[in-house]
Image 1 (cartoon, one colour):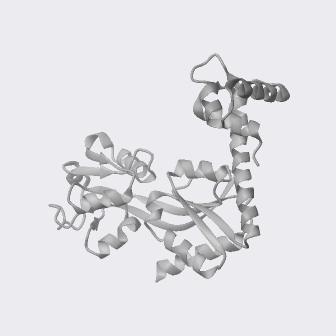
Image 2: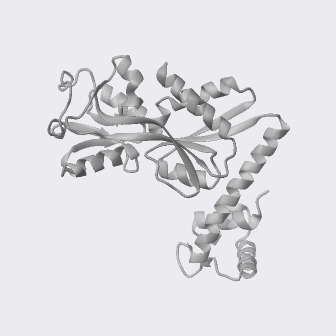
Image 3: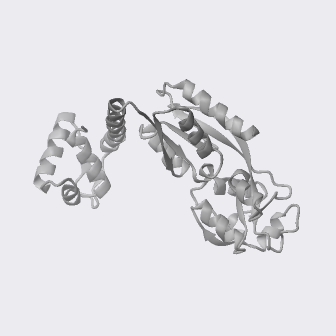
Length: 297
């Protein structure tokens, strides 16, 4: 069980006040305050600035919070591992980005479960920044991300390369074009991923290289859900810029068209990333094998 003092600091930081945190924890405010004062006394430092509203952490408090989150991740991992041992099963917690969710990764994980009786895989879909944070806090065992950045605490393997393309409906005025220029896209309404998306970031950087910016385009909607974007594009509400791998099934069924952008190459790398403390390298080897088996099928 997680130390109540750790849980208290996490809750106060989240709620922004002692009173709200006390209600969340089912304690009186005075009891919570005394608990934090004892913790600060034992540490010899102050964790919170009580003269601020909402409550803010001191520099030492931010450091404590960083490790408290890791400890909470360890505690949850231990409880799950204990239950898995008790019932002779194993759980793998995997994070994937929204675009990877629509590619081959989910099929790879399903195939691995089919091969290995007793293993259960929990898939978490989130943005790349949050997935990295959860991986470093030991809330996830493994993540599949595009364009991952190097981190001293993490190891990574390249699995595949992908490219960004223009996605449009079969009835769109540009549907007959073999490739579409940026100038042609300027005159169309766009449905793009949200501002934290790696896909959007890659498109922005490619535009910057051409001396252009997103401000020049007609952005109709910003949507986090790939499925929603593809449905809107198929209904001819606008164009989108998406990974080719995220649209394979819809293109095969004739629901969407995929076209390259003239004189603009936007390549990204799909990577498998794990914490250096993760020990089952055989599992990683098999996931990589399955990915390439599906790729060649």
